[in-house]
Amino acid sequence: MNKLLVITAVIAFLALGTESFRVPRQVEEEKGTISTVVDTIKSYYDQSVDTASGYVETIKGYKLNEKAKNLYEDTVRAVSTYAGIFNDQLYHILYPQESS
Image 1 (tube, one colour):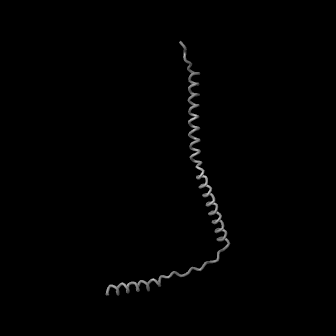
Image 2: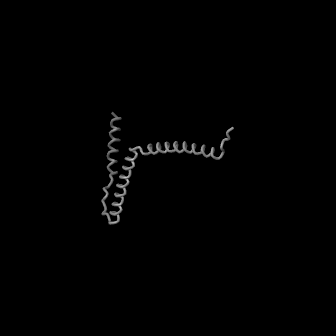
Image 3: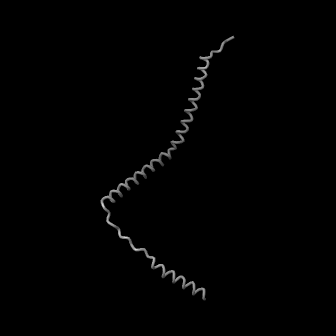
């Protein structure tokens, strides 16, 4: 019974103590011309960033990075093949083999 009384007293003390910690309401101040312009510019900036992010996500959805990578690899493979052929032809022009 004593424990119940102590717990009730502690809860009552905490409940009464929390009333003194009320936060006063903040009064909204009137915004001046400069703050209105700054807020408008910020909203336009946020909207443009959101639009650009949407475009980036759409482009990522097309998997263009993967397609560009595949195109690059195919191009490098073809160019290295033709460079090897050109190198071989040039070598045989500069150093012709003598027939016996």
